[in-house]
Amino acid sequence: MAVTRAQQPVVTTTGTAPLPVRSRLAHPALLLTGIVLVALNMRACLAAVSPMVAEIQHTFGLSATASGLITTVPVLFQGVGAPLTPRLTRRFGTERVVLGAVLVLGAGVLLRVLPSVAALYAGCVVIGVAIAVLNVSMPGLVKREFPGRAAAMTGVYSTTMLVGATMAAGLSVPLEHALGGGWQASLGSWSVLALVATVAWLPQVLRARAGATAGTAAGPAASAASSRPIEGIWRSPLAWQISLFMGISSLLVYTLVAWMPTILADHGMDRGEAGLVFAFSNLVQVAGAFLVPLFAGRMTRQRALAVSMAVLNGLGIAVLLIAPVPGAWVSATILGVAQGGSLGLGLAFIVLRTDSAAGAAQLGGMSQAVGYLVAAAGPVGAGALHQLTGDWTTPLALMLALAAVVAAAGWGAGRNRTL
Image (cartoon, rainbow, N blue to C red; front, top):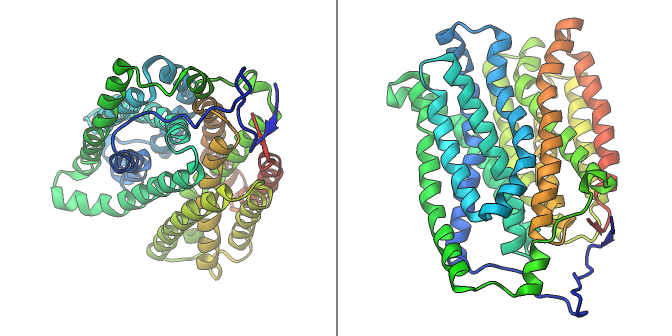
C-alpha cells in the first residue's frame, strides 16, 4: 500500500489535483444542525441506562453479571457492526444510511423497554449496531462536506456526543419522576430525540437524491477521488496504530465508566460524592473532546498530542491508584481531559490520515471495529480481576501499563502520513 504525505494532494491521471469534493446538500447551517442532533443521539441512550441498572435488575431479577451485560452488549455490537458500514454507504449513500441508522436507533430504544428480558437485550444489540453505523458514517461525511475544516468539525460532533451523554445521565432519574412510568418511561423517552434528529436529517436525504437526479456531481475525477477505497487497510501498520490508540483509550474510558464510582466508594468515599466526582469527570471530557481536535487540525504531526493524552490518562490512573479519595477530584479532572481528548483525537485521526471520504469510512470501520471489541473487554476484565484479587490495585496497575501502549500507538498514529 502506498503511503503519502498528509498535505500531498490527490493527483489524477491528467496530473492536476481535483478540487475538494463536496455534495450539494442543504444549507450549511441546516447540515450542521443535523450533524449536531444526530451526534446527540450517539451516546445519550447508552448513558441514560447507567442510573437505571439497579431498577432494571430488580424488575427482571437479573444477576450482577447479567446486569453488566446491559451496558457491555451495545459496546460489543458497536465493534461487530462497524466493518459493515462502508459497504452500506457505498451502496445506499451516506445520507440515507445515517437516516436509517437514526431510525433504527430510536426503534432499539423502544424495544429495550418492552416487558421482557429478551426484548431488553435485543434492544441493546439493535442500539449497538445503529451506533456503530453512525460512528463510521460521520467521519466520512465530515471529510466530504468540510474538507478544509474536518478536524474542527470532528471536535464539534465528538463534543456533542459527550454533551448528549452527560445530559442523559443527569436527566434519567428526573425524567423517571416527571413521567411517572418508572425506568421504562425514562429510557423510552430518548426515542423522541432520535425522532427529532430524523426530521432534521431529512433535508440532507432529499437534497442528495435531487442532486443525484440532476447530475450535480463534482466531476468524474473528483468523484473518483472521493470514493477511492484504501487497498489492504487491514495490513497497514498505520491503520493498526490508529485502531489500537482508539481501542485501548476506549477500554480505559469504559472501564472507569463502569467502576470509578465503585472504586472511590470502596476506599471510603460517600457514594453520593463518588457519583459527583464521576459526573464532574464526564463534564470535563467535553472540553477535551472539543479542544484537542482543534489543535490536531493545526498540526502537521500529532505525535506530541497523542502521547500527551496517554500521559494524562496514566497520571489520572496513578492518582486514583495512590490516593483514591484525597486525590479524587484531581484524578477526575485529569482523566476528563485525557478521555475526552483521546476520543476527539482518535476521531480526528480518521479524517487526517485519509484523503477521501470513502477512505475515512473504511478506516473508521476498521478502527472502531477493533476499538469497541477491545473496549468491551475492559469493564468485564477489571471486574474479574477485582473479584480474583479482592482489591482494585491490580486492575488499576494494568490500566497504567496500557496507557504506555496507548502512547506507543499514538506516536505511530501521529505521523504526517495518509493511507
